[in-house]
Image (tube, rainbow over all chains, first blue to last red; front, side, top):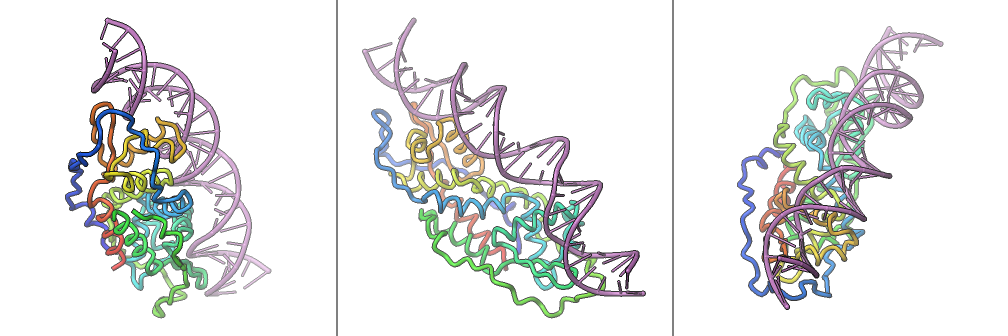
Length: 131
Length: 131
DNA sequence: GTAACACATCGAGATCCTTCGATCTGACCA
DNA sequence: TGGTCAGATCGAAGGATCTCGATGTGTTAC
């Protein structure tokens, strides 16, 4: 997993070529509004993105994916992110609840791994959303 | 833009076939940790996802994209999401700051539109992250 | 049985986020 | 010049989130 490419890109927020048909006066509020994402679908989506909306959780996900065997226990994660064990445990629970990480208890250790396809699914949804 | 497909899927959080080499006893904390995403890159990524981590903002993005000409003004958005004008303005600012929406002032109206490629870029990053 | 260990859960404090009414800024019109 | 409209900005209230130390739970080792 390579999240570092995010930094190197040219995320230019260029001005858009706006549709010429847009009026500059008169009533601007068209009565019909195409509701592309209903509230329930939006809430589901937002829940997944919210889990990725914390730098610590992005790092945890990344470290787990890059770890030997694609899995890591809590004690592997506290030191790299520089947070306490309860805090790391809290973030891992959020990632599990979002369906991004899976938890497997083996003996006294809890092993976390990335759920296959979960990131792909989110990514595909974003890539296709703009069409 | 169709965000509704998110609801229909089978986002199964199946148990993973875990690597058999993982030890069930002995020291579990390997000294070397491959840091896949450095803190700065993780923070940048999290900032983008955090903008998408609110159901209202997902709906706003979706409504803007589905609107005539791919753009909409604030007065087109307050009624569909059922929130006050200052609140909608606040959410739009967050989406603009995240590079997902562009703002263009024409006369006394402010038109918002999805920044081309911004969602694709995030989506591609997620799709490739798991590799 | 008892001790040690890995991890989850439980408050609590600090901070951030969402939302609103009120107000301010510009643009347009008479 | 004054009025109206679209939208941004400004506090403030309420709730959610992040983080921690303390503690509980289950497993392993002696």
